Image 1 (spheres, rainbow, N blue to C red):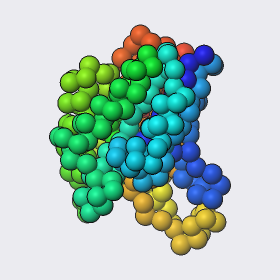
Image 2: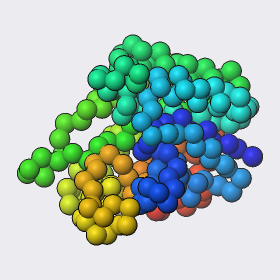
Image 3: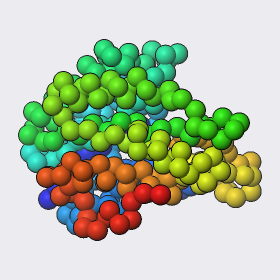
Length: 234
């Protein structure tokens, strides 16, 4: 039995009926994995590498994770919030140092850490062009950590950005919490949220992570259900 532990933020977390239709990547990822692979999603709204640890959430994973398990590490959105010292990390120092702590939790238990770059935000200009990203330094920092600590990386940022560019401003709305008034009871006035996901977006980006794991091959590709590649992409 393989277990995937997921340390991440609101783009990954499990949601319930009170936030419907918001859906996290980790919430739907079980649809891409083989029978006998269990996803234990510890992701929580608003967390960074720093606040996740400070709240004892990494410690909880440390107590549960075991040999042969996987630790998916996916942060960036909240690490970049300079205005909040409880969450902010510097991309080329404290962010990388924190990632090392997560990596060592996995390795200490003979588990397999996997770094996953943050999913891109849906930000287009008035001409429908995707704007430059706020995540760039954190993506670079995570890639530096992957190289420094010899850890596999799935570049969800690059894949999600390509998907957004291909779909365009209007078509990509269905992936996000971006909708008109009167559609969902929870949000009677509608919503224009370019970060959090609906089911279609969560499925798309979970599929791109599955694609990245298949590309890594070996024990990582073996997590993914046979034939999944036929259903991945836009």
